[in-house]
Image (cartoon, rainbow, N blue to C red):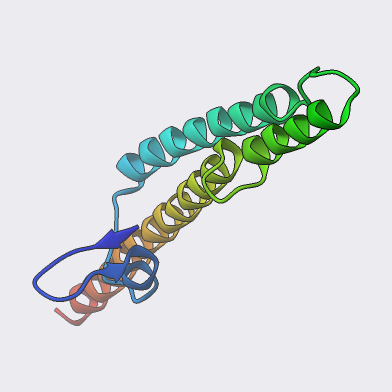
Length: 126
């Protein structure tokens, strides 16, 4: 996932890691739960695809049937744009985004703690 602004697109993970992105823990937790629910759904789709779409088709025990069965199975699970490959890549992006949200929550909490410490320091000096 990328953040697009006035300059070139920057990966979300970079901006989060640098501390530029923070998110309120309540909103972040809601977003994390939604991402996890989508990850779980994708896992279900991949599992179903591996047991049904990628299952060898019963095309008969002959050379043509064997070749066609292998071709369809490979397309279902192994090619770059197969359902399984695309869903696996989608799941990776979801997982990376979820991890960035968790880190952005941590950024918010660290900033909040720093601000509280700074305020206490100034309150003690008054």
